[in-house]
Picture 1: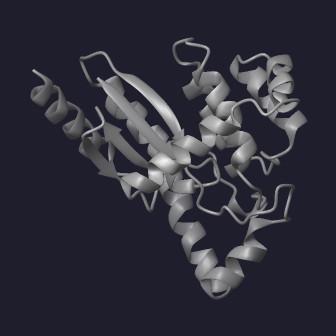
Picture 2: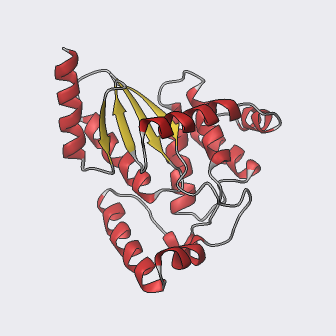
Picture 3: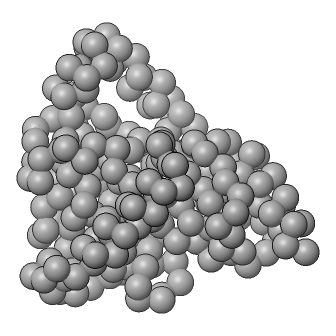
Length: 212
């Protein structure tokens, strides 16, 4: 079974969605090929570090109280999945460089590598306050996940991955995806949002049944 997972590294719900999908897959008796696809929640974010995300979030969502409430809700949900979460440390950054690294990991063909890179980048952004738009930071994080840092630096020295990222973002637009995470099964059936592991498990079983 093929699953395309549209997500954004800077999206806390996607961070949660990865953990829940992992739980669902652990209980699924079938072969799954999952691929991470790019989406941008904030395409206008600066190419380099734009400062603490909270400053921008307060302006966008109407004040500190609303942002604090949203953080408290997400902190509880993340804790339930065993995920570290420190939203007050999060930087506002453009996610295209991180998407390029994820794309590079997916192209290696090494099982589990892309998921490991995504996991490391999620943690770096949502728990550690690292700048996941900075190339040297991304090279170091990728190396921790098993993707050679030098290969990441080679990619950043060229335009490698940019046409593919652009094409994937356009595919998401054509599909009508307006929020992430978005799980697309076999290019036909979809589950939108960071649904529970139980909902994702049911989707896996339902699609497996359709495929026979």
